[in-house]
Amino acid sequence: MEITHLDHLVLTVTDINTTLAFYNQVLGMDIHQYGEGRFALQFGNQKINLHQYGKEFLPKAKFPIPGSADLCFITKTPLHRVIQELQEHAIDVFEGPVERMGASGTMLSVYFRDPDQNLIEISNYI
Image 1 (cartoon, one colour):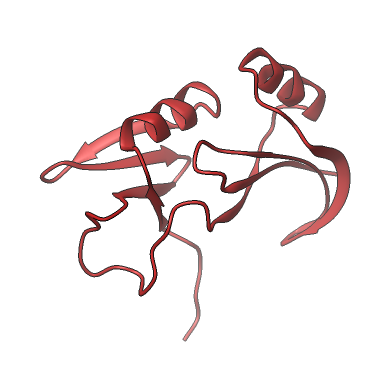
Image 2 (cartoon, rainbow, N blue to C red; image 1 turned 180 degrees about the vertical axis):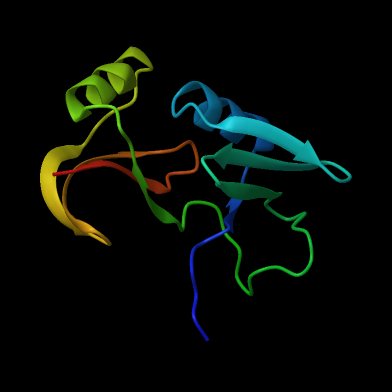
């Protein structure tokens, strides 16, 4: 087997509308509705499907719970501008910029949390 890339992942959230607003307005992801009441956040050629906690679609993770994700997103936007944009949205950057090792090499990262307290890392490759 040869895996080539990640197509999508699922976040279990406490409030779909709050999550959609955050990822759209703060991180610039596109909102997509599909099927009967299903929502996803699209960026590049990947997406994040959203499941409402307690009303998850099947099949689902064995223990879906809001706030358990740790996600890293790569941006072309310089980190000083990312920090500035996060501050404009009253988002607390609690760590960074710090150097980290990503899948393709060394990067600079900042860390903050989404409305469900998932850890969000935004990075630039060096």
